[in-house]
Image (cartoon, rainbow, N blue to C red):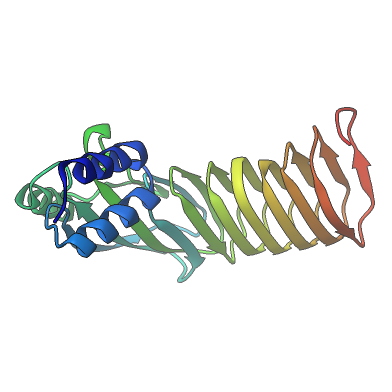
Length: 250
């Protein structure tokens, strides 16, 4: 039997962690263990194909809350977007969540003006009750701006990649990569310049310059360009690189 004190304790846990994926996982475990049915999930998948005039595309991705944005290269002159949206009925009724997902399926948050494409832009009032993951294919010559996704995976871009506040995995990039307020970062096989602010950085096979600022942990090898590490970065390993520690570095 569940006591009033137990219910209050679980409610407090949910309030403390409600804006994180850990909270959702913990609530599902608690609900399943005690046979509660107040938390339920609905899922909707949306797919769109966008034609572009040429291969130079500007792509912005927002609101990948609680999910992963996976971006890879595909056909020339075409962008495909597959969004998987999961709604959690902790605050709202399951019917309300289902209605919200159906509305998003009819009117997905995808805007296109020529070769400029914006994906996302959820209202704040519903953002914490939804988890969105994207799988996107783009022409190789695409510049990507990502803001909001928890995790971003990028592969094969010829253009530049910019992200804010994400766990990032990038490989086979021939443009520049800039990551602000970074978390976990893994970069391999890139020919452009790499700039990372914050985060835990693992990078290898970089043909351009590397600039790391306030990174918690740094492990890099095989960099042919200049490497600058500044502002109290904690270096774990440096192989086959020549490093310039900035004035506020180690």
